[in-house]
Amino acid sequence: MEAIEVDKMAAVEASHWWYLALRDALGRTLMHPELRLPSHPKVLDAGCGTGEHLRFLDQLLGPSYLGGFDVSARAVALATAKAPGADVYQSDLCDPELHVDSLDLIVSCDVICIPGIARTLRGLEKLVRNLKSGGILVLNLPAYSWLKSEHDVAVNTSERYTSGDVSRLMDQLGLEKLRLSYRLCLLLPLVAAVRLPGILKRVEPDRARSDLHLAPSAPVNRLLFRLLALENRLIARGISLPFGSSVLAIARKR
Image (cartoon, rainbow, N blue to C red; front, side, top):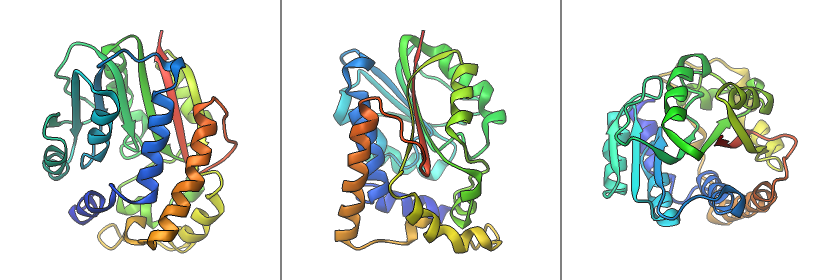
């Protein structure tokens, strides 16, 4: 990812509706009694980006270990500043370095889609081996290849997925699926309309810009978040939404 996109992510992820809604979805599902996370779990953010999720997971779970890695040195530096108590380091999901022997929770949001499933599978298998029995893996991924646009070029996304793709990945990893749902169901027409120009035109990577540069007004930002919070309540209760621009999967190691 270009440095300008990393810096833009760091600047907006604390307040942008998309990030707020993703963290709301994580919080509602991770705190559901069905997941049975232990007190003070050992937590890893695999592809931690610029660190806002690390800060959120620390506040939500009070982990006894909180680690995060990212392939980008710039992202690691920003994440270290945002989450100074976390073990943040540079590593690659395709061959991840692990600093603890076992983990209760692994979160990876919009990371596999950059190198793709084929290149990350061995790394994912390594992460799953490091999960304790009963440990939880959480993935959030972009949906539908037809939605690939200038945004994906800007953030180096090589693949987008259906819920069936993600379900098969969970099966391949030998995990028990607890939640599998599309997200941004209500907003899919809006997302498609906004991205349509970027879908139709070819953009060189050095000229591409992500959706993060389209900053909504504060009232619109609040409205979009509230709509997604309604969806998140349904997902946390085990209701799978039929379509959306993202896929959320939560699975347990048997």
